[in-house]
Image: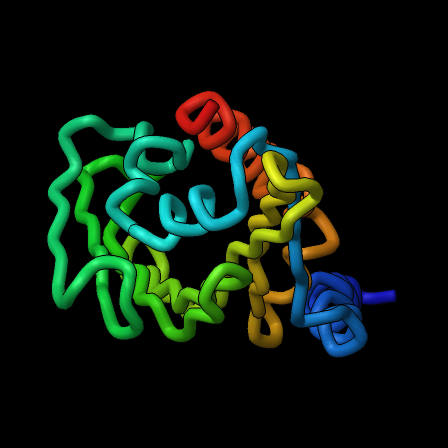
Length: 178
């Protein structure tokens, strides 16, 4: 086999094979964590529905104490936007908008990341009474990676990476409220 054939075969393997694998790889992923907070449902829901309160419990909010923050609208209502800008690549630039609120039960957010990469994803928080003084809080994320970047999902454990951050945030939330 000539050198050109070997180079061509190597290029096919390096380029074509990953593209074919990506064509059969899921593009969507989701992560969810939960915790029980020893407070009544309405008290917990009223706290988490304020995006500004996420600054007190979210792991990401504490990653850069010097990040710039901006807000638009009335916190705790549909349409409120909380944005951030950081020089840290781990934090970047983006915003979160409240898209829907089911009072006492669920808040849906749109997450729009601008730097270090562009992405639009969905997140949510739910509350459910376990007892009169206990509330189950769930925090979840629904992401999407377009083809061919979705091949990275074979190598990135989003469940672990995001899940650990959600768990830290929920532990902080529990600690703040109890």
